[in-house]
Length: 221
View 1: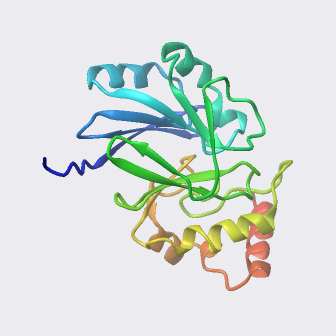
View 2 (view 1 turned 60 degrees about the horizontal axis):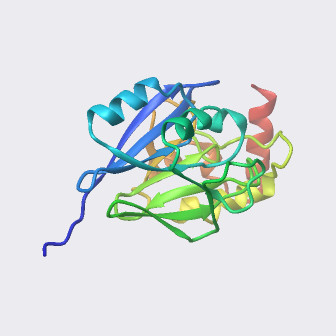
């Protein structure tokens, strides 16, 4: 029997509260798919799923800020048996079909595997979904194109964010493509290498320098 090694396909949908990205991902061999953050109006997504015969099995939640889960009920209504995947200690209840994961756990989408990376800082239930094989990572609001997420809300912590970025995400393969939770940058995606090269947020030499960069950003918003 030949080895199945289907490439993970990614389609982004933009909308929601503030240039949110919702991602539809699927395995091209098995056609099993998942949603990353149900944050945009779902009609177009439903139509794409049906017209391409994608078998939607999971919803992956990067964190439970309202703008990232605001259309969750629409998906669970249409797909009542779908599994909702997120950090095992979420701030908000995600329903009866919720399955919690911890750092370094694995989620399968068809023949593709995603590693869960626990990345608190922007929010304390933030996780990233990282595919080593496909060199992609869904970072939610932890890392955007050109800057990091903010730490101005309850349950955010700048020291945790620094650790999540510098000791976890930036240590991955530098060719890994970042798929962020919002369209805040000069492009919709970026490699880790290019983000480090082009942004002061990702080229700091210490946590104190990172805090200074964040403070300067907040002053000039």
